[in-house]
Length: 399
Length: 151
Image 1 (cartoon, rainbow over the protein chains, first blue to last red):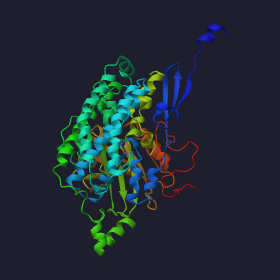
Image 2 (image 1 turned 30 degrees about the vertical axis):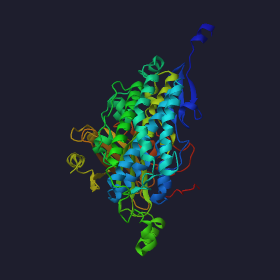
Image 3 (image 1 turned 180 degrees about the horizontal axis):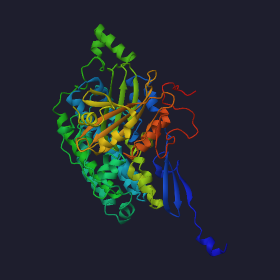
Image 4 (image 1 turned 180 degrees about the vertical axis):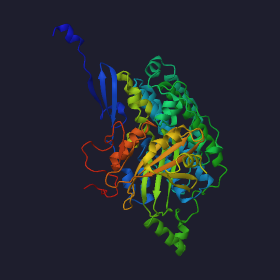
């Protein structure tokens, strides 16, 4: 074999991206088959963070499942719990007071902003733009502080309850929320100034990871991923829950279905989420303070007054704590518009205090499954943009 | 009645086992044999237009027999509604059903998960490997007879 032929000989290379890599947003390993810098095949290897949450839930009372729900998509912990509580309330057939619904909407939208800010910071950082991270985390920190106000915890507030909330909003929360709502649109403009017309950003994101609307549906995409491709679908608007039908907001859509359009969609979603928080704050002022749980002895703990002074209240309290909630026999599926897409809970109840089966439909798991489709034929560096644009949280992928 | 139930009763009267309405949701139990045809019909018919598969859940109903089942949750963007399809699998020792990957690509990972966790085989699946557990794992962790804390 002469040297010229040796030069021509090519073979593909297998490259491990991860599991320990700063831009995989957790412990994701992607096995890449490369021809030079060209990706021929991408095979995501997941499960490093599999904790068996679905299995664990079959052995715990519904109350004890709730902390696990916070730990699915941990960047939007309370939204997962929101979905779980809605599913339980559907199964039990209970309606929660308006004040609870508005507070839940407000928390969910603040969490959406926090999740999108985290995505913005890390996605920018992955693609070489360091500054947005600091700006995004500045605002995210304020939302974390608000979470701390309502519960004492920052990442995992565990503030929602089946049938209501753990407590009413603390003093000082409403002014803090108002301050955030008023200042946030200007902050959003800062992010736009940093990235939207930045030539490097445009080069790295335009035309990368293109998905048509039909393909997006075929691959089960939801949330901002589908909307970036122009799928006009938002569960908050199309199948409203928790009084979302009373709120006025726009569902932003992309045209080209590429990473840049998904970026624009999420940026606009933050503005819209901010609008919803503002409306929720206005509506909250009209609801009676303290009305924070459904008066249903099957799920809601009796008031302390009833526990101390009334034998029925005391028994009710003990039965709920020791035995747990016993929903009727049945199966429900309830999904919500989580920051990353459709977060669904399929609960099968056999009437006992434990779920017979709890299937969690996490958006990250489904969005990631299209990785191979997006990466084929792209350059190695694009794979980082693709992981960033999918906005995955591995705890939600692996469950 | 739900459009999906109407359609299936019209096109596949012998396949429909039961239609249950609960809390505003429709769940249709079908025989597993023609699941791909059923899914295709639900996806392509203009009345239903279920072009989106939300999830697939593998089920273990131990101690019942048939023990295993597969649950599909479909969404129609056109009608803004959902339907749950359920198929109970005849063989308790080696449960299997046809793969619906040809109908929706998103089924790929859902079916891999159901295979990994429940040991349900999906015939015709392009790439039926474990997904969450390591490749050399023995057993299917979400089966009811699999202990919570391992063996």
